[in-house]
Image 1 (tube, rainbow, N blue to C red):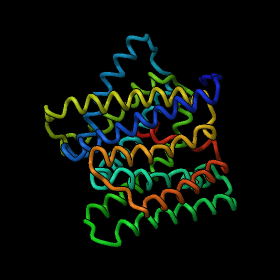
Image 2 (image 1 turned 30 degrees about the vertical axis):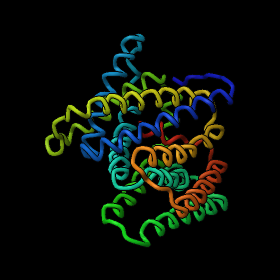
Image 3 (image 1 turned 30 degrees about the horizontal axis):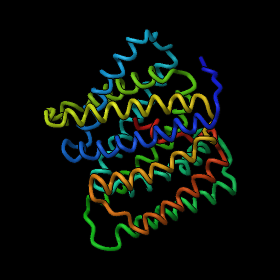
Length: 301
């Protein structure tokens, strides 16, 4: 079932912009948790906490059980999100927030090529230009990062961000379908629940006891993720992706601010220039295939 809604694009844009700021704050909380608990435990415990919060909302609002098609979509997207989230949050424990967010913006460009592979679409001249700009931006950030002294962890962190971006690019195809087929509370509950279920399969090998001192931060991260997901699901169900695409790039500003405020992370000129190139390529990608480009926060919440 597709949900048809109309609202002012300006309102949808404002709601999405608010969600970006909230989710960027969640990224900062998850960086702290990933450093303290490890990425796997941080993501699993956050999704378990989110399941309780969103599950309470799901029951309290009298939501019905989703149709089988919706449930399959929730499950498959949760599998993709689980790997994507672990790789991204593992990376931000090793990289400055602004650098990680900047590198992740390559995802819409990657989505063009996945659309060609998965959907048989033709790659045009604009897509090639977007790729050149995006890859150039990635190269500039990486050259700036690894031209001096750096740790091996930072190298693996950059690789993990790019791997996460590939998964996110595929997830772009799923996110719009999910926002059109289900309500925000249903999405929030089943995405948290099923992502936790997927991650729990590795619990016998990787699960560590919950650190009591980190419970408040876990609750905060889960609540921020759910609020952001609800707002973004609402916005993307009411406005075309091409209207909301520019909102995504405000995440870099928030990441730079929170990275500096909470972790004393500087923002280098190469990061700024590289991100500008990646954003330019992504905006070209959005013009080529606006319906295939969605928002990172929907994907990783």
